[in-house]
Length: 488
Image (cartoon, rainbow, N blue to C red; front, side, top):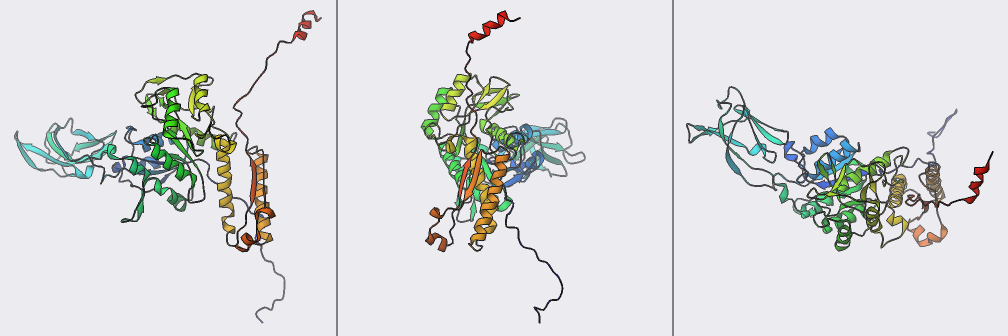
């Protein structure tokens, strides 16, 4: 009797055509160093930040970008290009990368004295002098003095009413300090520690999507990417994120070795930076006296272009070439200014190197080619906007159909996948983001044995627009217009 029903009722069936999920197109992922000891920040753990204050609160901040390249990325991404979010991995370990204990006499000036930013607050010991030579007992933090990281220093401030009686007293200060120079490329590359069961450095790439549900697509390591081994690892990780997704590695030419545009090409060949997943930049950039790696600006302008509704509209279909950079000059590592005309900039582009050009409209990113050019002339590899669009479509398709994995492999499932994705591709074409695209389920590509094993193959045909990198005009003298001299 449980099946008995008398009346009217209705049920709901899942829509056969589903709305595709689009992948992130320009999430920055940086592995480097940050002054995390300022804020009790994390070591070898991905940190997600969607704003400048959030990033600084998690990583600390210093203008010393030669030692703390994550701070360079934080400033460029959030302050100069209004990008976000960013995923960061700091490998500077305050328990491991240490300079050693230092003891020195320092004098208060108006109740304060400054220690280096690298000084670890929890290692500071302070004593005074009884008379001229004898050391007093150790003073107590919170009662006699306080410590605060501010303005690029660790500031010690005398507390009124404590045992430090003079605002200009001489203090004997002992402290240990982090040493960013002890971070090596091995720390950046990272690996898996069998004893701790933890990953580090770029080995943490595969933990980002499970943890934050974002796909890191632009890989950065500003102070280390010029190393050929680091660049190779960045490329390998970007090509195989979670065994499914793909991104790009942004690599800087070493301007201490390549001081001219021709030497930059020689450096590229010497270091074998030739992969479609690599974007190579030369030289460094400067703004207001601050020197930046070109990679952080390239990542910034790419993300800004992707987000611009009139250009990418949330997709990487538009090249960031000829888009404004937030710089006022190009420089080498030692600060020497670099001047490039169009011919020299094009020579770099012709050899798969992106640069900047100050020609019309101020400084712009200049170059559409990945590092595989000119050896590889497959348009889906060497134009980075086309290559990124293929990656983005593939990433989006995986996200969209994941919920259909392990469902019954029948005609209804196949039609649902084909119809849903064709509608989505038609929308991309209508928006001008692709010239055309379609998905098909072809009998020739699906053998009986594969179908029996639960394997279905779908074929996506896709044509993103190439960048209009050459506009050629012919100007001709037309004799017929001389007749206008006799017009009434």
